Structure formats: C-alpha cells, structure tokens
Image (cartoon, rainbow, N blue to C red; front, side, top):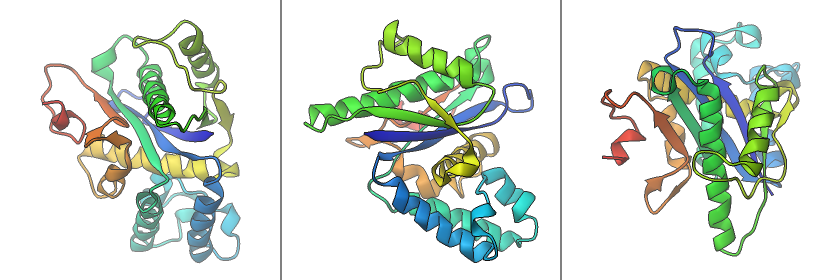
Length: 244
C-alpha cells in the first residue's frame, strides 16, 4: 500500500491568500518509519531536552513561532532545508500537490478543487504502478481540519459517482484525518505545502527548488503538481511552462 500524507497552506476564508495549496508526500507503507527517524534526529539537535515535543510546521519554522521562538533564523532555515533534503534524496518518495488560484475556480471551493486534483493524480500514479505489475492500493492521510467531513464525502463520491475526469479506482478507503503532532509524516507534508505556497504566493523558490525534482513524473513530464490559474493570466511557473 502507498500512503499519501497531505496538508494545506493558505486559508479559503482569508482573501489575502491568492492561492490555496494542498500538497504532501506519498511513499510505500514501510518507509515512514525511516523518514520519521531522520526528522527526529533534527529535532534532537534543535531541542535536545524534549525532541518529541517540537513540531515541524513550515510557517512556524520560518517565522520563529512556538517551539521555534528561541532558535536563530539561520538555524531554523537550516533545519527546514535539511528536512526537505531528506525527501529530495529519497527515491522512494513521490510528492503531489495542487496550487489553486481562487479566481480560477470561483465560485467553487478552492480546497475541494485542490483535493480533486491531488486525488486524481495519486490515483493515476497507482494506476501506472499496476500497469508495471506492481498493484498497490492507496490511502490518503491528512491533518485534522474543518474540511474533514466535506473531503471524506468528496472522496467517497469520486469512487462511486466519479469526478470530472472519471472515477478513482485505486484508493482503499476514504481519507483518514490525524493530529499532526502524532506523526512526523504529516509534518513533512506541512513543510512541503508551505514551500509550495511560498513559491506560488511569493515567488520564493529557495525551498521549493529542493523538492521540485521529487514531484511525481514520467518521461520528463511532471504529473504530481498542478497550478490552476485564470486562463488570461500568464505564468512561467514550474508547472505551467511544461504546458506550452
């Protein structure tokens, strides 16, 4: 089974956020243990007295909030980059994400459109594995949020009624929602989502460039990340430039 850990960045209720991001990390079921150990090692260096108590959240790390308040800016950025490099250096990791510009999908809920995109792309990835005689089911795991009920309902409909591109065939169950404090993997997903957010909202590619090669791709074509934007708006981002 492949597990896809997702988190969001940006708020549907905050009009200052042009984009809503949903992104995260997919990997085979036996891999999370090793990735979590690597993040624990960074946590032990940052806060040796209580490493399990420190949570890796992209926004908190860069702005020095919560447990990161007493950590110097350079050390915080170093820790963030090291965490992303763990993902970047693992060939077992496949990243997925969607950046949805509000204006591109209005009046639809941008988070629901992002979820539809990510579900479809994860399902297609599992379909490719099946065609290579490596049949796997998928399970999506998200941070607890106000979207829990609506996204579970959407996923159920995708499997039975279908979405705009068809049905989902390879997901084992509706999404599970967990407390991010309980699993480092959702914290990885948060750091990926925040790096994607900074890329699309602020044009800052420092963090994004570390993980960009790990977004799911085949034959040089990136399938794992999409950017939904107004059709009249030019864009030269990582996703859009391959469409031209």
